[in-house]
Image (cartoon, rainbow, N blue to C red; front, side, top):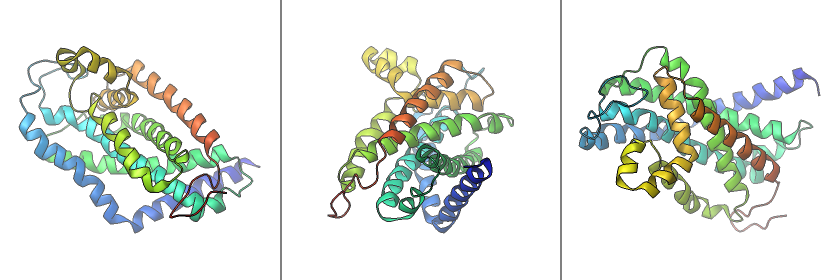
Length: 267
């Protein structure tokens, strides 16, 4: 296959994902409701949590809304990635992925391109959220909106690969939503998305170490530091390494007709 054919496939998958997103605008609105409620309602009761200490990457006292915003960016990607992984497996069994997997292009390239396409859509939703967050005085540096882009894309690939890996090995996709509850909520709550890790350490050392081993923690920290024009090599390195491992496992385990949908039997 020539580079032009790879590029044509890449553009085609990206275009289809954006067209699909455009036809599901209600999904876009509903994806923003959750983080906005957390930012406006939940943060209102926790404004006093921060402001008592200056922590990196901030160089002054901050409001809780400012602290929680990067974590909510990660939340948007987390929920969208899991939903996107589920849609990929449904498409594999009943929709366009069945046709796409018949392409002579390598399967890992097709899957990574699909994950990247879903990630780009999630990144677009994150930027809309950051614009709306200006209304509650969450104002990162202007260049931070550009600097955070690599962290957002890397996070979307990591979480998309995780969702695909889980969805691939679930025999009945009707149970996918229930399984995701045991993945999404522990990953989100046991991370630095809502509370700084030093507070976790004060409350419970073992919970602090769980947060440290949570890959979502490092993804959120990569987003947080990048948004405020700081470099966190450990967060980026861990997130990138986990992304590579999960992507390899997900692409290797992705098989046609592995799961059962609505009573159908896998081949």
